[in-house]
Image (cartoon, rainbow, N blue to C red):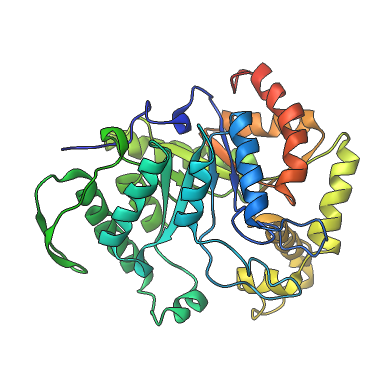
Length: 374
């Protein structure tokens, strides 16, 4: 049996031209390495309330961060968090239409076990589970498992083989063997198959040339970052989509990360950005996260650029700042759609407190712009 991700499978393939979701709510502080008291708790009660709110608002997805160890600092940024597959299962059982992803580090979980996990959660949700594949990058976390990361390109070779085993278990109705560079398995078989004879949508955020190739060839969607301006992503997206179409993937999508500070006035939004991502940033955690704490300090000429980079990581993983009044935020999201982004994973300092204003003010503007259904 051949199974594939299908547009009819779930709301992730909605009619909305710009898909929107939430990124990182499974962890304490979410994406924002800040000391402000209103920062995200990451508690189960708050995650459940948020998931139901997003579901009712017609948002397409919730994407967790796979994290096993915090970044320290005054807040121990992301030090508390939920394992993403069991977390997803709980949220999917309590919602109706939204897709919830699990984020999995391929070297830390065996693919036969993983495939069974994913199918279980997929059936719980009647086909609303998605898989975010991570091939590994944080050695501090791998040390907790007694695991050593492979050389960069080999991580993706391993990921390719790992994902092939998972997909094989989803597809094959008879036992099969695996003889590869990393796995030698005999009589592999599993049931049930994914819900509705289609498989979970698969994402990856590889940013290197090898990582992007892995995503294009073996996944359904790719996450990419924006460095200095939205328009610069256009050429990258165009190249990715052309390569995907050449491999027969007409539905391939490219997603970005956006950090939202939306207030009634642009001045209020900019002031809050400065407050939480600069004045109250957890700089020790930020520098550990981005690995710049041990580097040579920048020259005076590059100091301003250096600080902007740190501030963006304090605000949310270096995601694109969506700061301003509702018109400004909606216009920036429309520009992301115009340059080719399929969707955006959003971060807020406090998702529950801030999303309702975004829902009530920004989503209607995107609907009027033809990017989302009313």
